[in-house]
Length: 205
Image (cartoon, rainbow, N blue to C red; front, top):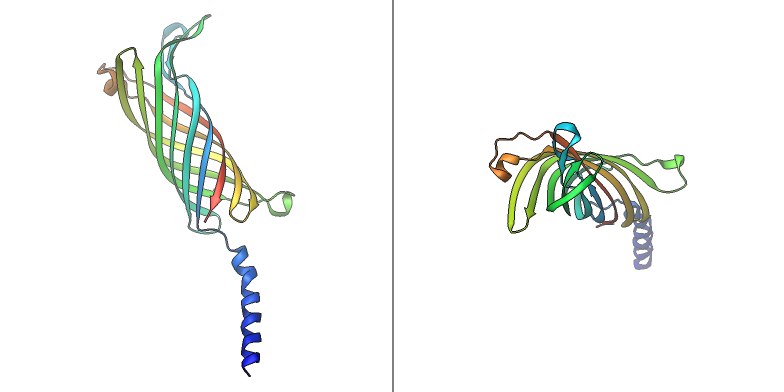
């Protein structure tokens, strides 16, 4: 009788293992690196412009799965580059240093390709809101400005194992640089698109 109970227990355990192995991780952490392409801070007359240039990007994103294909995400990233003045025929002239800290939250929606691909690829889109905190400086002078920014993104995850994958993503931060806060000048800057292009490793747990 005892042997029968042991066998029943082993069969039940074996039957439960596949379900546990297929269960998707609830949390996922994605450290990433890439490149940030900033939009113009000001578009001046005769084709002149002021921008934060471009620079390397690194950051991390934490996600919590609400359903199999919907997750709440939180993100933080940092990029640094050169403050540039654009002049027709001369291109961009470096006039200082700039950096930006992005922090935001939002939702991610994914949909696996399934039989449409030989690889376990899951395309996704993200929508969210947060802020871009700029630090700009020229010589001993340094100013800061924090600006609200919407963001939209798209990318794809490639699963290597149940808890490990690769991620490629492009994300657009849409906002205005607050020149009044940074310089105390009553100048209104236009809305700009700031593109974060990145690749990273997705860890599930």
